[in-house]
Image (cartoon, rainbow, N blue to C red; front, side, top):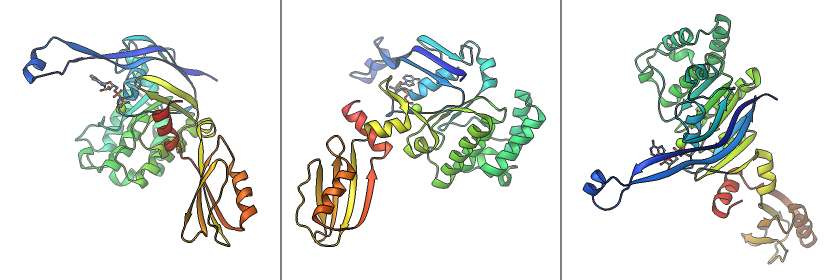
Length: 325
Ligand SMILES: Nc1ncnc2c1ncn2[C@@H]1O[C@H](COP(=O)(O)OP(=O)(O)O)[C@@H](O)[C@H]1O
Ligand SMILES: [Mg+2]
């Protein structure tokens, strides 16, 4: 597989004024503090990969994306995007990438989106056939027809984000960087955007790097997850592997045909509901399995209904932040 992105010992510092004591001291102080926003990270990304960048606020996700997109120069280390240094070859890089920052718009505020697309077609010299195909995709997946003639400033957040994504991929970039593309959107708009991203990946093998606070976005779109915390990569693995190897607990809910007062099962803590007919078990998977638990329960009482809930990716990630890998 073709390697599109290579990052080696990449770091980015920010220098900020030290904030201690009075406002005057702050204003006139020459003291500075260095923040290691991104601290010597390494990874590479292959063509067609769908990668989720996850981490708490301030982890360094946006800073990394800005360096990949050529918006920000690294303090040290190497970045290569499709064979180029994205910051030094910024213009060249722009043809290969699409970028979206959910927090700020990149569209012309006063132009109707239809006109914006025509302008972008000219800027990027997009061939007619690709332009037409993409307009077709937008109409089918992003529901843009009804707002075609409206200026961007009149659009709702959901409409605007759909237009942003359309504008970012109009020139068929091989690489798409999405920084919080679904922030503030309702479920319907989120779903539309997720489906569209997956469609791009299927049709064009578009490589996607995505950050999101919504773990549903990550679970539904991404195959690989890069977990970043305090500027350092903590985990980099397939989403499935994360689920398998870090999934330490499961919840098993059973309905029984006769009430049971107490269970004593190694590796599972049981809590009764109602009058002992319903039980919730928290299973420690390092000690036992859900299968063994069910077997042990059924030796004591007949099970009429059962539900097994594995830990969600979101819980797994919170666990990693709290307790380490
Ligand atoms: N322009 C900036 N000037 C100074 N500090 C910044 C700047 N941008 C980001 N930071 C700091 O760098 C760290 C990483 O920020 P960021 O990359 O935006 O994190 P994330 O996107 O994961 O929330 C944070 O501590 C943040 O406060
Ligand atoms: Mg950010």
